[in-house]
Image (cartoon, rainbow, N blue to C red; front, side):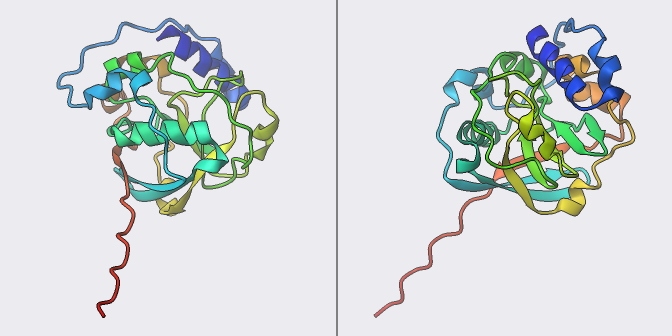
Length: 236
C-alpha cells in the first residue's frame, strides 16, 4: 500500500502548512494485520469487477456514531467519480470507516475498516473528470495528491468554501452534496485533527482508530436509498 500512502502524504501538502510534518514522515506501509472477523463483501477484493454505471442521480444515507446524514449524487457533475462512489457504497465499502482527518475546512475519510480491503484498493484509481462543481460547504469530493488520475476511495466533506481547489492539478471537483444532516457532519469529532497515522489507518483498519483514537467518529453504515415506488394508476 506504499503507493497509496505516498499519494496521501503528498496531498497533505496541498491543504496547508500544518500538514507538512506528515508529508515528511515515512511512507513505508506496515504489513497489514489480519482482521479478527472479516465480515465485508468479498467482491471488494476485486476492484476491477466493480464497474457498474451509476444512476443519473442517487442518494446515500450515512449512519454514523454522531447521527445520520444523506448525500445526493448527480452523475453529470463527475461521471467517473459518481460511478466509483456508487460501486463502493453498493458493496458497503464505507461501513465501519473512521473519520481520521478532521480540520476546520473539511472532514476526511475513506480507508476501509478492513486492512485486506485497503490493500486491494491501493492502486485502484480512476480517471479525472472535468471540474464542473466546486468544493463548497456541504459538498463531497475525492481527496487527491494533486496529480492527474489519482482518485481512489478517499473522500472529504467541505465545511467551508474550498473552491480554490478548482485550480489545483488533479480533480477536486465535487460529485455530490449533503442534502440533510449537515448539522451531523458538523459534529464529526475534530479533537484529533490530523494526528492519526494514515499508514496505520490503512494497514490496521478500524482497530487502530478504536484503540488509539476512541473518540473518532465512525460510519456505521453507508447505503443506497431506494427510489420511491411509482404511484399506482387510479382504477377506472
